[in-house]
Image (cartoon, rainbow, N blue to C red):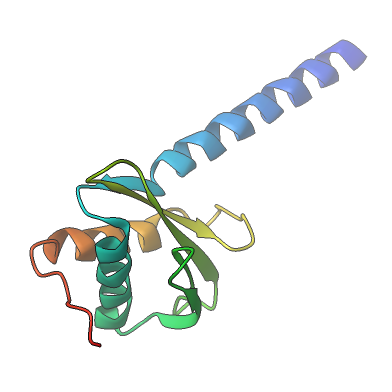
Length: 123
């Protein structure tokens, strides 16, 4: 009986690990833009939706924390991937992936729509 319980718990843990890995792949995307341009485009995407509130941002490190309309907080990190591309990750601040990836998909779709209209820096 103990072997059966141990086997079931082991299979459950393995399935949880693979579920989190599949969620992480949906939270990550590479764009053919510089990190600065992707950062500005991401801020523009968050503001254009009207349902996100930017809580904290640091442009030097490429970090944005925002709150969705469901009161859950998310962290966006933007990093340079190469000479002409950047990586963006949108993760829940509390690492709870139970809500799915609809928020991430919404932000990525908005970035995809506006990728040709990069906002310019105002000095």
